[in-house]
Amino acid sequence: MSNTNTDRYFEDYVAGTELEVGSVCMSEAGIIEYASKYDPQEFHVNPEKAVNGPFGGLIASGWHTAAVVMRLLVDEYLSSASSLGSPGLDELRWLAPVRPDDKLTVRARVTASRRSKSKPDRGLIHTRIEVSNQNSVMVMTMNAVNVVACRKP
Amino acid sequence: MSNTNTDRYFEDYVAGTELEVGSVCMSEAGIIEYASKYDPQEFHVNPEKAVNGPFGGLIASGWHTAAVVMRLLVDEYLSSASSLGSPGLDELRWLAPVRPDDKLTVRARVTASRRSKSKPDRGLIHTRIEVSNQNSVMVMTMNAVNVVACRKP
Image (tube, rainbow over all chains, first blue to last red; front, side, top):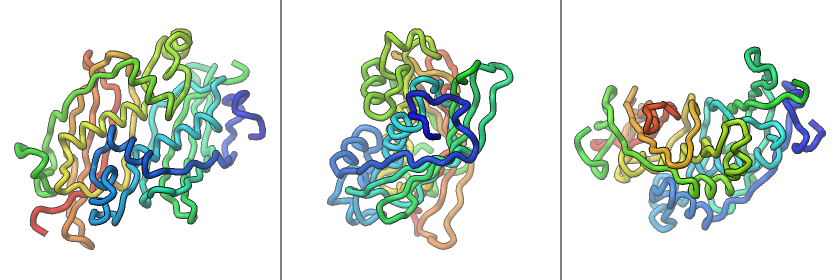
């Protein structure tokens, strides 16, 4: 997958293709901002109380981790020329806590691609997403599915 | 599940229990704000271009829908007294577009609960989450898993 993601279509997501999508740093302020809005549990929003909580300190909402991963996928993996949305995903796993100042690195591997029979201008791609931190600890994985337009309908 | 969620523990999440969790309205401004940060695809952030896009208009990022559903679950289903995080979830499905001014209603049904053998002060609960809009169209479903503390360890 050597082409840039501004010119990437269904044909480019060949099963077996691997890509280091990019990295993102998680700040304490960002963790608290996201969670205050969408997941205000104490271990996501209150650093003092989180110390005595189940994770021994503040951790990011898993939905926040998924959101910053999505941003990297939009910027570096999916293409504005061909992305047509997603019907869902499977086996989203939050494997280890994400803490302030963690640097997350996202890898994507195309596990399957199938051209649509009913709508032959597009296809479904299946992608294994793996997210690890600066200590090479896997923190999140999921099996994503995306609808992608073909270059040659 | 008649008790309020400030006094809800593993023992209260009995398999078969159903709950109408609550409702939330999606605004165009909110859809654009979330997606600008985490999922800036044109059909999520640009109402004009979205008209000619794959969904015929602006739609919410699926991650945004999941986030507002999580907020309702934190406020009305999970308990600050007992919620200990989540190892992940299965079969997240975005079944129909969520558009500006849609009112989403969330229902939860406990499908299974199992006390931990290795850590008997807590248990795992499995919850089927169903999200429908004001026209009773199912827009999102998922099978959530949560770790919840027991009332009587």
